[in-house]
Structures are given as structure tokens and as C-alpha cells.
Image 1 (spheres, rainbow, N blue to C red):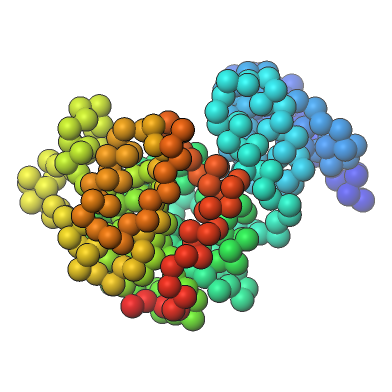
Image 2: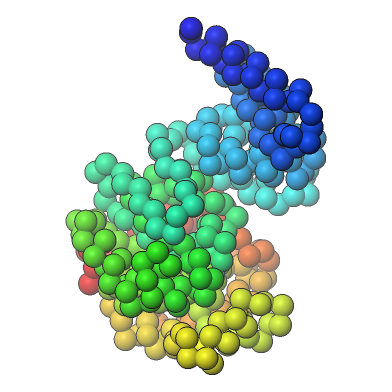
Amino acid sequence: MDDDDVLLAVDDELQALLNRPRGRVRRALPQLHLYRSVIAWKRTGRFTTPFEDVVTARIQFWELDEHCAILDYKRRFVDEAVERFPDRRGFRLFQRVLGTISHSRSRFKAGSGDVQIYRRPDATMTIIGFGDIKGGFTGVGWTLFDRAIAEPLNANIILLRDRNRRIYLKGIESLGDYQTSIAKVRELLKEFAHTRIVATGCSGGVFGAINFSADLGVRHIVAFSGPTTIEIGEANSDRQAYRLISADIEAGVIERIDLAAKVNASAIDRIDFFVAGQSPFDMAQLNALRERSPKVVPHIYEDLGGHVITDYAIEDGSIFTAFNAGPQTPGLA
């Protein structure tokens, strides 16, 4: 069978699934319609819209992000979503980021584990990525992060997730408690000692990126709209995660950290910190650290008010300037 025969056979199987009683395939319908559209694109070069509503389109895009490497199809999908749902910031974000990617040879796929390594041949940089409260890179996702940021930087990725949901203060679940996690990540980083090591965190991952870096000897951090102190979070009654962290601190389960003091006493050389100027909570978190530490270099998008500003930093190139702005010394301090 040639490629076209294979695609036709797969499309026939998908159509058969769609013809089954709806209750048996309801949860998979967005993906099934998506894959039929992808097959039609591969066979004919024509785009058929696989969604009718915004919820379905969102489900399908995240499926695309994780499992489909066809950039032209992704761009066409997002262009259609933006046209149909112009008030949805998320699709415009994806459109902006995808517009910066001319090609990609990456085979990185963000799995579900709390420690994941992607090695890039002849990499000159290693990025330690600290996920947000749900483990992702807020607004963008790790797969798109790799194609839009890590691949152009020629960087390996060490992806860490906080299943404990305590901004990494309890460590990485599969590695152990905080101190054990630090020891194991330091051991892991020996493999990458010939590269420049940069930590990055988004949203809830910012505290983990900075705190871990201070203990690991990472010199440079690139942070995106996240916490630098628990106290500001405690003052916001709608932020349950901070209340849970405070309860654990009071119970003696985890230690309260003065992050600014820890940064100033560490080998950290520079923290590039991206934030939207019209986001009071995120600005307060930035200011809590930069007012006490000269190591913070703020990147403030004065006219923006959202929590996610990564797409703008990718589009204007400042994210690449930031990742390359730290010390050029390889390995840990």
C-alpha cells in the first residue's frame, strides 16, 4: 500500500467509529473529527474545519500541539479558529507563536511524568523548565515551548512538574522531599555540565525555578508572571493554593522561604522577569523581589493586563535575548 492508500484506510476506520452509537464515542469525537481533517489535508492539501464550537476547537488544538508536527496544518487550524472566535485570546496567542516558527525537526512530546528529559544533539544550552500548578507552561504548553523557544536556542529540556502543588517547596514527588530532589537534580545535571544551564518557570513554577536554582547553583533564570513570596498570595482570598501552602508552613510540613534573601546569598547572577504591567498581582510579585534584589532584570509589558505574555516575548524576540543574557559559563556554579 502507498501512503495515500494508508491514509484512506485510516480515514475509513475513523468514519466507521463516527458512525457508531454516539454514546460510545462521544468523548473522542473532537479528536476523531480532527484526525479526519488532518488526513484530508495530507491527501488533498485542502483544509476542512473539524470544529463547530470553541470548546471543541480548544480540545483539538491541545491534541494538535501534543501529537501533530505538521506546522502548516496547525497554522491553518488556528487561522480558522481566530476568524470564527475573534474574541478568544488563546487562539490569537497560538497564531502569534506559530507565526514565528519557520520549520521544526523536533520530536519532543510533553509526557505526563514529573521528570522528563529531551536531549538535543550538540545542544549548547540546557533549560530546566518548572511547570505551573497544572504542570504546563502557562498559555503555551511545553510542546510549543520546545518548538518556539528551546529548538531555536539549541537547548536540551529538563521538564519538572510539581504534583504536590506546593510551588515545589515539597520537592518533586518521584524524586523525594525537597532536599532529596535537589540532590538528585544536581546529579542529573552532571550530564549537561558542558552546556549553559538556564532555569525557567511560568506562573506557579516561578518560585520553584528561583528557589531550586539558588540551591543547585544555577546562575541564570528566565521567569514569567509568577510568585516570589507567599505573603502576597495569602492576601488574595481567591487563591486557594497559597492558603494550602501557608497551612503546611504553619504545620511545619514545609519551610517558609525568604526568597529575596536566598537569591542575594546565592550564586544566581541574573533573573530576567517578564510580566504584564496592567496585572496588579503579577506586578506585586515582581516588585517584592526586585525591590530587595539587584539581580532582577524586569521586562514589563506596560500596556498588557493578562497573566500570559509569553507570546509577545516570543514575537518581539526579547525572550531569546533574555535566555542569552546570562553568564556564558557552562555547568553549575
